[in-house]
Length: 234
Ligand SMILES: C[S@@+](CC[C@H](N)C(=O)[O-])C[C@H]1O[C@@H](n2cnc3c(N)ncnc32)[C@H](O)[C@@H]1O
Image (cartoon, rainbow, N blue to C red):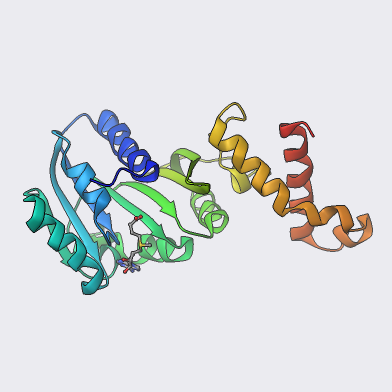
């Protein structure tokens, strides 16, 4: 089994939801592709079934081959768009798909059965546009259970756990929106992430205060830049 750190961390997030729910789980893995996460989670005693889906039958074939090779009895595969091919699940993982596409899946396809959610708990690892995804979660007052970043092979991955059925306001401040609410500077992965974000904002050294004041996004990013400067103590 491939044991990338990212896959392990996503599986740990499933463990966390299992502890919250305290029952056996039906898991859905949307956009499973190679199926490593479906394989990993299906090995847990507390998992009854993994529904692994992909919009591309060619992508899903990799997992179908893996299921045959390893006789993975708990995994069921389905071809289709987002949540449209599932009836219900205890927790759904959407990893490696863009933030806008995740929003669209959650908005359009979650409430389809008698007005009830197909699933309440989601583990989200957007491939990009995490800031836009956070704005959507915070604006809808969806309960954010946790939001942190992990580093695997020098790449950074935000992992968000939400309960879409519960309302809870998350403060829309610069840290929570741009960096992720539950990150701690003492965490090695987050510290490395801060350095990367700081380096990506180095262009502020060349901008005048007047130029920054003229643009709302630039102003917000400048506050972020100064905040990171303090956090990493440069
Ligand atoms: C980069 S791979 C991510 C694989 C795996 N989830 C991971 O995190 O390692 C993205 C996969 O999502 C699938 N995908 C993209 N949009 C989708 C959608 N709307 N519904 C289902 N699968 C989708 C793609 O076909 C592709 O196989």
